Length: 245
Ligand SMILES: C[S@@+](CC[C@H](N)C(=O)[O-])C[C@H]1O[C@@H](n2cnc3c(N)ncnc32)[C@H](O)[C@@H]1O
Image 1: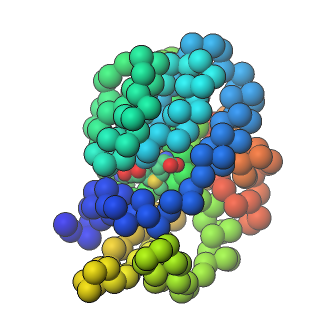
Image 2: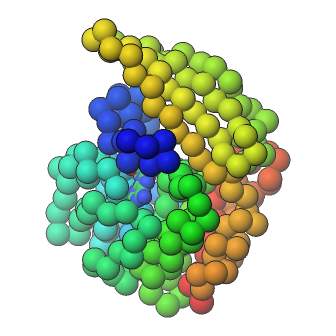
């Protein structure tokens, strides 16, 4: 697998799920509760979870009675998500760089937990935003939850060991101006592994451009999962709502 397409490999691996096994359903439940109330989502709305992983947010959204569709590139995550599939909760393997035509158009499209910024070039980011916009109905809303660049830069932990029995993951982090890099190395069963991840350092103005190029306009921003105001220096997250014009 090429370094360029690292995300096809890493997110589909058993080790990714082991390392991030603490990623909680509770965090998803609390955030979705606040978001559903803030957005005043009407019952039975059609909502899309883009890069849904194992479906922790999609399941919460479905519990409010919405018709939820999730997609992700990682077939292993979709296999696990499909364990909770029902007639109001569907999952697909799909690449966000291509148009998504199932079940839509949607009133809301979500992209949670830094599930963007992985690609090599601007054209791929553009293609993904075209997919997001295309999936939405007129006046539909896109909600993106991304890392906040300045906050993350100021708190970058260069090296860290994380134990997830029986494996100790050795993590290295750096930033080169364009990307945040993370390397995860470990040994299992006498074999050495190294996975490399990278996420573009995209700021609010980059997202404003991507939105503008795809018929979307940012109408609200937040800085954390409690929906406090966004502050570029101090907010842990960059969360925005964009409306399809
Ligand atoms: C950090 S995980 C977050 C997953 C999920 N949103 C959550 O909060 O649990 C990022 C997800 O993006 C997915 N992903 C990466 N590239 C993708 C692509 N081109 N199209 C669709 N999904 C992609 C990965 O497979 C992974 O599940």
